[in-house]
Every structure is written in structure tokens, then in C-alpha cells.
Image 1 (cartoon, rainbow, N blue to C red):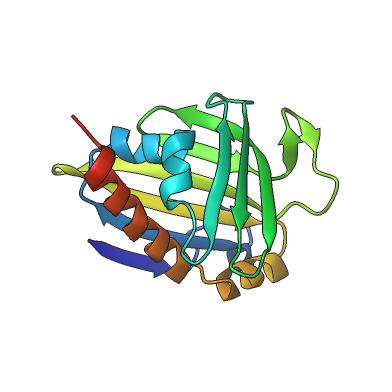
Image 2: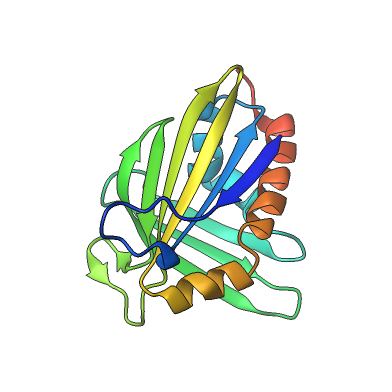
Length: 169
């Protein structure tokens, strides 16, 4: 396992201070990692770093499909994360956003991010690159302060532990 985070490699014209990236090589094939990100029964087992816990997940994994994940914090916090899948390439790529709460219905508040997950075969495992684009530099800095990439590393440790129990080729 190796984690890296790096300054943004943003597309031409996209402000680098609004993008975060994180890469990890995981010991499971791309289809396992993709499923961990899209199967509600698996999402609730690993999705956020303890002591937080994902307690509910719904997914309609298709371009334009909805996702909804509820997380509970150690002090009674409840965080709802509705979103929409913008691009779905099974086993290879998943792009999602919170800019929409249901299929093509804009969120009522300020959107936070667009997440881009790329899954590349790497030997018997997967090199996963997460690119997170934010609507503002402030939101990007807020996400970094929330623990990106450290929180993602812990959550993905939990993912790999879950996959050790659940994944069958």
C-alpha cells in the first residue's frame, strides 16, 4: 500500500487551488474497488473514518443516477450526502457530485465538490486516483482541513479490511 497526495494537476483553465488529489495502490482488482464504492452494503462498512460511521447508503449506479449516504458522528452528528453520478464506467471510473440532490435537481445550498475516481489495474491490485474539484478555493481548503488525504487513507484502510472479509473472485 502506498498513498500519495499531490498538488493539483488540474485541466487547462481550472484553478489549481480548487483541486485535491490522492492516489493509493490497493491489493484488490478494479472491480472490487469499484464495487466497494457503489454497493450500499459495502459502503456502510468502510466509508468514513471511525469514530464516524456510514449508517445508510443508497445508490443508482448509472450516469444521472442518485446516491445518498448518511453518516453519524460520535457526538450525535448526522450528515446527509445526497448526490448524482455524472459518469460511470464500471470497474474503471466513477464521477459524482453533490451539486445535485436528485437526478438533475440542483442542491439548495452551495455545492461542495465533484469527485473523480479512476481505477487502473496495477499487477493484481488497483491504482486508485481520487481527484476532488471544489467550487471555491475556500471549500478546497476546508476539505483539506477536514483531513483530506489523511481521512481518505484511514477510510481506505477500512475498505481493504472489509474487502478481506467480503471479496470473492
